[in-house]
Image (cartoon, rainbow, N blue to C red):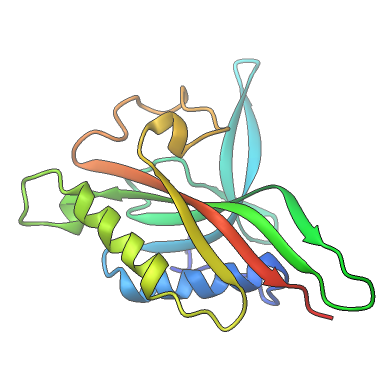
Length: 188
């Protein structure tokens, strides 16, 4: 399957107008990032009569990509948008919208730092945080970072991890979930 490095909706609206900007910044500033995916959906598949939930990226024409840890996919990021999306309603004018988001990264440290033998996840965390807090100049909307998660159950909260090899965050692999708030004014 031919996957674009930053797959985006043709006509982004609402939260996607922020997400596509962040996708571009991440892809441009993180040379090790193979894919900067947009918003994922919580999808389900059934195996042996049991439901497994996974984050899926819509690639168009009804095709989805499972973005649970996958060494064949390379280094990547994707967004999760949480319910609810809060509206500060103001009659006959634009409304302010606030929502919680998560930005998940999964990576192979051998590909990020080929000559380094240490598990240097803190350097990656600092690099991503710097971009998200000091280098993310958006033309529409704002993104705040409030927390960073590193435990597998927190990174992939709401998804079925039993389907995955339990070693997916051991050297050379790693992951983070950056969580915060997106804020924007609705277009009139």
